[in-house]
Image 1 (cartoon, helix red, strand yellow):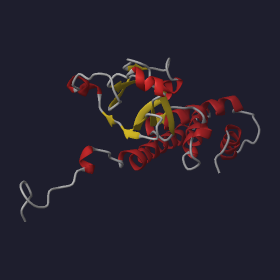
Image 2 (cartoon, helix red, strand yellow):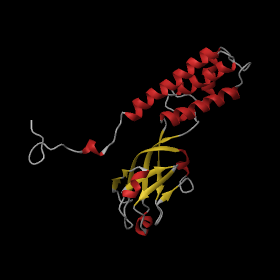
Image 3 (cartoon, one colour):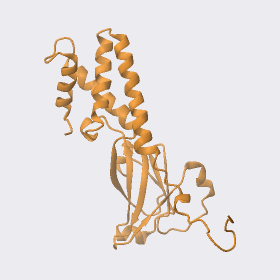
Length: 219
């Protein structure tokens, strides 16, 4: 079961064998838990969320001024266009250096998206008709947060491990603290590889290799 912040503090105190604040204050432990959560969410992409961009007429770039959630967005994973008539279309993700290779478009339905510096680019430009219909682009993305309740219960121990390491440093138990921190970063690296990096969504994954006729490989 996922823990609240106060329950996580209690868990850390159990490991420190200090049920009530004597050497380590609750405020210190809470700060360390929040820092550990921020590292886990940003380095490990372990917090996922979904939100929408409401398309604006003739607008290419969307920032947190348009949609507040973009301020916490780290990595968009998937996007689809909803024209509000029960028709949905997946968008193709491109990277900044590909923008110059995108042909000039007239306004129309979104086809590509690009994320750079906490800003989302949607191509081509939105038409007035799409705005009138209430068109949106929905995103699944990795999110930065310091809220431990946003972490699934299987990842919450990471934030508490970080807090425990910082507590040991404060108590001058440097070797133990260093070991805990090393394990913390190793676990984040493992979880990112296991959760994120193994899912490769390239166009080649959808191509069917030729099995006969012109261009087919011969045995």
